[in-house]
Image (cartoon, rainbow, N blue to C red; front, side, top):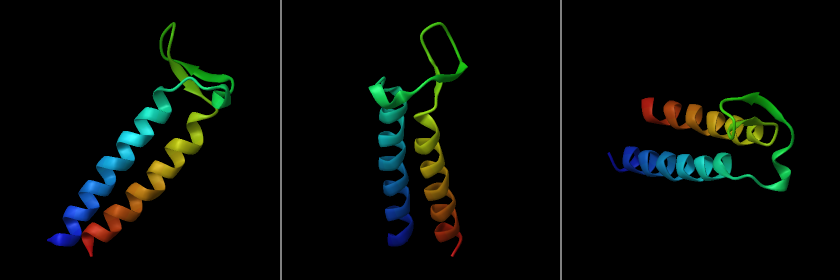
Length: 66
């Protein structure tokens, strides 16, 4: 059970960091790929954040099932 608690806490922390990065509007954001509203959208800089989150989520899921 100790291992699953670590997995949950790790995913919560990673998700928090990912959301903070996705919400930021830094100079590295790049051009907008998909507009969600007049002031929000998916930028090129969001893609690496989403990719890393997905990779870690799959690894966490596999570890959870072990």
